[in-house]
Image (cartoon, rainbow, N blue to C red):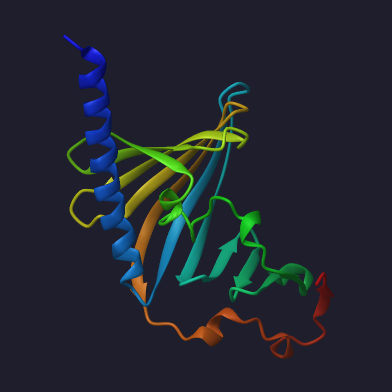
Length: 201
């Protein structure tokens, strides 16, 4: 019996099933005008047994987003990034570099489409579990685990496994569709008196 044939066939079926589930998940988010999500981010170092976490909120429309985390607001209109720090009344302005944000809440829904092998791992009563492996072995991480709701096909959470034995977990706690104008993703410094503007462009 040629066991390698069965293993290959089984692997291809898993890849196909993973792609079908990921396509449905991606299609859900693409069908929306815009959406918001509250999340918890955790960094877990498995060697040192260190864990750090914080909560945040992100609002996404196409390539644009507003991210609120740890006392700052990051606004991206697809070309420019404004990082506003209310406590300092300061905004930093830079040019958006898509390559700088390799894995984030605004691109993870489509991430699997380029440069990844996909594997359907298993499922429980509520979630499909799918792993992504980067084809580029020079990446700092070796695996992404995604949990997807079996009814809605919304993302429940995703974990990035780093080669330094650190795990980064994004837990999506609240999710809803929004109707937001493009102007929402532009920072208007004129609305803030005496704001310090630091332009890196």
